[in-house]
Amino acid sequence: EPLNLYELQAIVSIILEHGESRKDIEWTRVQTIGLGFVSFAAPQLLFYPFLYAGTRLSTDVISYTGGNRQFNGVIDVFGKTLKLDGIAGLYRGLIISVAETGIKAAVYVGLFPHYLHVSQVSTLDILKNNN
Image 1 (spheres, helix red, strand yellow):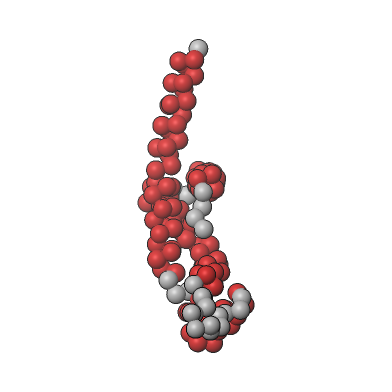
Image 2 (cartoon, helix red, strand yellow):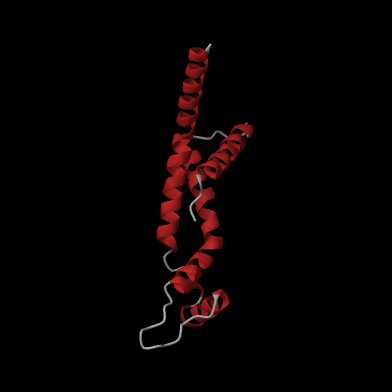
């Protein structure tokens, strides 16, 4: 499931604060965007098999002729997939998911400082207009 805006903001803030706290490392914009890509895409390696199993279970329907379902649960999906396709079978389609998440994260990390600037400027304008 994609991260919501608040989770993205929290993770990006941590990434940027860590980068700024390390005075011995010069972080370029490209390195920061790359770090964002990796930090958002890496968890996909852990959670993608569960997304795969959920997709297989949700598309496992009984035929009109009264046949049985192919899978009896998540463990059954894992077992049958590992038997037929090996570990690679659990990660079928991972590249698209990582690319989608990683590109979103890279764009978000790249635009986050600009977003902060715009939000601070608009907040200051609101405060000035209310006083």
